[in-house]
Length: 422
Image 1 (cartoon, rainbow, N blue to C red):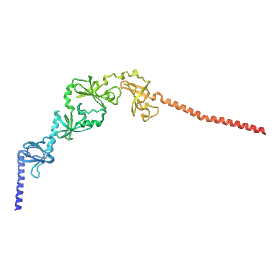
Image 2 (tube, rainbow, N blue to C red; image 1 turned 135 degrees about the vertical axis):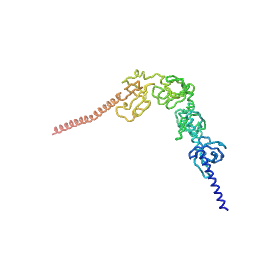
Image 3 (tube, helix red, strand yellow; image 1 turned 120 degrees about the vertical axis):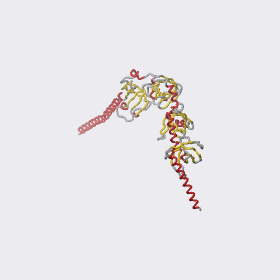
């Protein structure tokens, strides 16, 4: 009896499998049989905790289970019966005769297609900030992780920290965690799974309308909105912002922009470049170039006094006045070879130099200690020491000679006395 039951059950199972194959063959007559990797469409007939069943054209059943339910596109998050969805074939037949399907693969394809469309159409979307590092914000668009570089933040959100403290910058960036930001996709590379977004690009159209009013050479007036190691940001006209690079802040050499400009200060600047929405400004262009008059103040061979501002391996940067700085090259610091500039001076020292070159066009002025004859002075001092040494070495000889003469005289007197006694 048991044997007959097993045989009957095996026959039923075999018949069921045969019917599934017949359905697949019937499908083949109407449309190509799906292959592994194909994207197919079906209607949901069951949504369980661990698996989702799909009806494939009334011919066979597909199943999505386990990790294959994960979806980057977010389209499979709230599924209901009768919903029509797409899935990727990962196995033509499992132990139950079902087609094994994946939302994960299908979702990945759909998600990156969507990202490429957002990139091509320049559509503005919202992303959620999940974390931050020193370079920018980590964000999530749908279920895909992306990155928003610091340089792509709007002026409103750009982390300007006095002193450029990197830890404080990171702290400020991390304060965005959990917030949503409007962005545009600026890079979507599926193969590398690289997604880059920009907040700044969302303002591009508005800014371009305002920027169109300006041209290179125009003067603008605004307020210093931030000072960083490489320059200062100036905000003007309805939220436009331009950068004054450290080299464009003043005619003299500057090591720290904070020495010459402060946040909140009102300034005038000249537009020197417009590159899309990027505006470059110059403050020094509106100031009189002191180097045009430099030849009236400083001439070749002139002895000047200056303050050492900076020490570099190749020489000393010296402030001659508020606007003019000169360079004393290491080769001009002494007559003898020196390997360390710090042997000669330290920052803040006031020294005298001879002007050995003046180049107004290149904003360069060469200084020299060596040319002042410092070496000659030392040689003279050394010569005096030699003379003193020579006199000193000769003195004992004179004394010795005198003493010898005295001894001779004494000896002569003794001999005379002896002769008289005889």
